[in-house]
Image 1 (tube, rainbow over the protein chains, first blue to last red):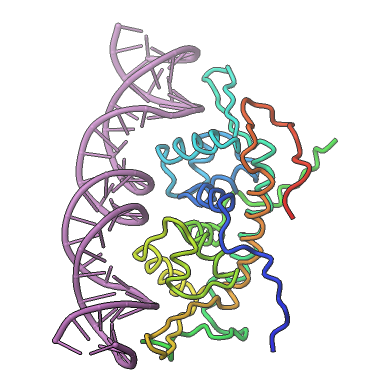
Image 2: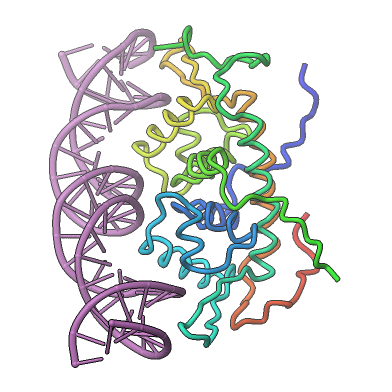
Length: 127
Length: 127
DNA sequence: TCTAGTGGGTTACGATAGGTAATAATGGAG
DNA sequence: CTCCATTATTACCTATCGTAACCCACTAGA
């Protein structure tokens, strides 16, 4: 017997979809985390995230800016300095980043042992 | 004086990075949501998610299975039926999906141009 | 003047991931 | 022996990404 489990989650939602495809683009998750941690300059971001090239960083920052998640400000020092900051909309992605971080730490590497997983080894269900 | 803002978040974490790149791959977020909502069959998933082709669905499911997020089980009815279910590890992604969903609903579409960062808190979202 | 350094990118080009459409494997039904 | 349903896979082509080199504006030396 199953209880009347109310399906509170719809199987598909266009807003969710748009959001998850935006922040799920390659490197975007890492960029957002670094910015939430306070990194704000172009070269600092590029150095913080291993493997992230200027090309990709530039492209992702433009996307995030276009979505209102990030603002770009030019500071007329010399040499010129550019800072990227999260908008309020961007800051509120903190909960998402934290949720992913918690999941990632909880399930880090340990391969399948220790806790009782309902059925995580595909050894007996192959076709 | 909020000077004592402790940086509790490191700018980069390899576990986080791996996780966000996994669940951020194209369509993966949508697939996970649908599965959390109870959709478990191949064609149901394909129908639930607009634009998702069998090729991509197959590929993503294999990745998620390889990561221990999803299990595949073959049910020998006729025609054969295949069900995909979330493991405990997969179920625990619910918090991530919910966080994204809340963010997406809160910040759905509003004009949001310019640099008006301190703007409107959308008063009500859906049920 | 020429060269080097700082900061923030852009361009060119090959490699890989993804979109699209057609088709396969399986087994029962007609 | 052909049809249908279900779960995929293959072939082909385009879009996105990775890599490396380069550009621009400015300053400080030599």
